Length: 260
Image (tube, rainbow, N blue to C red; front, side, top):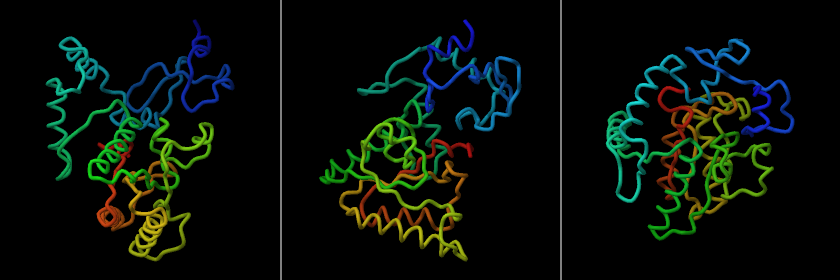
């Protein structure tokens, strides 16, 4: 069957599938920083897959060997109900050694959107256990991207992504991101940070601090142009979270481990 014939049976994400015709882009193989389509044409993989191939396509044999070794030993067993397996235990230990001080535990998920959904569930449970079940809202930043599952979509403010699915599953309030281009002019990082934190605090107060479960943000916001934070911004977010009792979530799905 041709690639186009196969496409008729395959639904694509973030795609108007009925509008995809004969020009479907089908990637056949990769090498280093390049991918090759079914016609043999070579392209630079500028997105690194979908931000997750930061090592490129050079290590396929090494990955295949490690995968084969694991699958030969154990194909699958779940991490739940007080059950685990050695590889998960070893990886959690390794991640704890690499992570900043205070980040000592790992909950594994199968992808970025699921990780964001898990963070939301943890935040809701955390507040419920502490006797604050009315904390059911989130603060997110304008222009951010946190995934395409229904809950994670709530933390995106792009109508093109959200409107086809109706109202959001989670109530979220959006605050300015760290893009200087769309902000008032500021002479220094100190002034810019003060503006951003003041806008964020104002939104928290308008929504009611007692209703906020978490604030989610990427350390470097990728969507819209790799937006780096000004000096003092993240410590300022930490201070707001501590002051008003909500959790601060750093979504590093795109930025973690050298990706951006």
